[in-house]
Image (cartoon, rainbow, N blue to C red; front, side, top):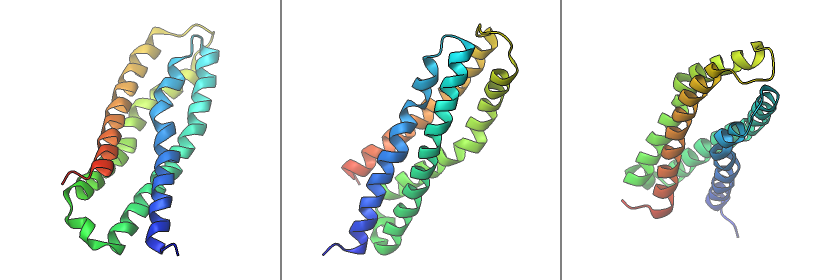
Length: 151
């Protein structure tokens, strides 16, 4: 018989696949655009993928905390606590770091006339992508901690 805890673990792993998988390619999707039309389309696709990232990420946090409350010894394990802290840091990076860097990009995509990509886009997107890459490294560290449970 499947226990409630095993169901939560299953949802947790499934959420990681649904949320983190698309999250790792958000930057790649928009790097493929060579014209403003292609960039606008890429950012629309990115927005749709980001919905999966948000749903998966929310389920990851909720199920991770539920597992901790069902098995309180997890809160004494370094890999769990560090993973939780890193996840919260990455989560906070959305409104604190990513949103301020993505708003000018979105505004440029909406306001720019013509199909040639302006130089300003490259400067703005570089800062955004650098921040996204740092968040991705944090998520990779979390995945490694979850798999290896080193301490």
